[in-house]
Length: 468
Image (cartoon, rainbow, N blue to C red; front, side, top):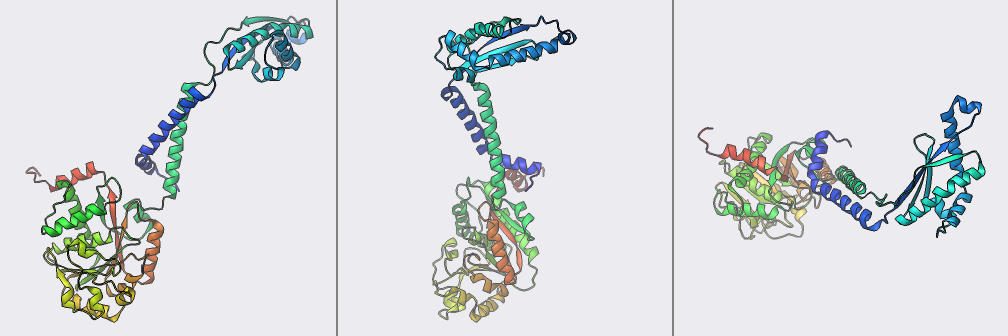
């Protein structure tokens, strides 16, 4: 999966808290480890100069090159067990020759005739004592092997006063960088393997269906259902007046406009001279299909159209709670022959809007919805209403709504941002397509908006500004 620069920036902004947390954690962990866990090391060094007084032809032709070869030879003299054993004995050290060899580094300085002996231990005094002993032993050992060798000390050993490692500042910076890189890579991986709906563009890229409506969320999380319910309660109680508790005037306006936009898009999508019959369903529960169907019905009724809202979720229907109605006789009673059609149509506080509740929960909901009685009921209601909205169960849970698709003009699929997954959507669309349903498009709930900018734009168009 490839990310554009814009998408990458969006991902970083989306997960900036996680990225900052990981970066700070990396800084803290590496600082604590470097400062308090890793034992500090101290390095003592001595530099020696090799003087070549050879008069050979090769020395005359290339004295510097010859000197460097001599230096390399002398270094090899000092990397023998004989040297470290002599250092251990003369310095009366507590370290064995093998231990001395591991803590000692000998090398040429910048391709010159100078070589450096460095000793690193966890004790500055030990480092100084060992390096000082080597400073005295090395020239004698080399002269013993090659009597013509002349070696002088250029930079004598001194007691180290500062630790050579760990470099706390550098390690802390590395920790912060690694934390940042880790968090960014993990964010990209999570984005790649995240199968949840991320927004309108995500739906449009994957499916050949339009977005009929985007309902914003003003919650800190995606559990926005309770406040959307309150939105419906206040509307039903006060006759078309949007008065939402704990929400500002601008917020109320944004929610209202979102459903009006859905209503407008639906009118362009369903072009029928007779009653427009529409199923509202969703792939899985808790995606807001009942909330959407209720608010959409209210929005359409406000235009003067005669609207009927039917609760065909005969297992867990709850539209009656949105309108503070008692669930007495309903669809199941009529389909079972226990109630007349006129007895189950309930008025609401909204002009032009009626509701049919589910009634008693039947043992055979799928059979009732697919029965001839259901066809006859829709045929009767078709003559009296401009719109019939049918709230059905989630199609991936039960297949009750599939038997209704032949009776309606189209199906609206409700999904929720960052909740509904693409496999669930694909499964739902496959079932509707197999039933030859007319898929009208998506309604996406819980859309996260940049409230500052979006609200200001909406407020601009909603305000009564004399200069506009």
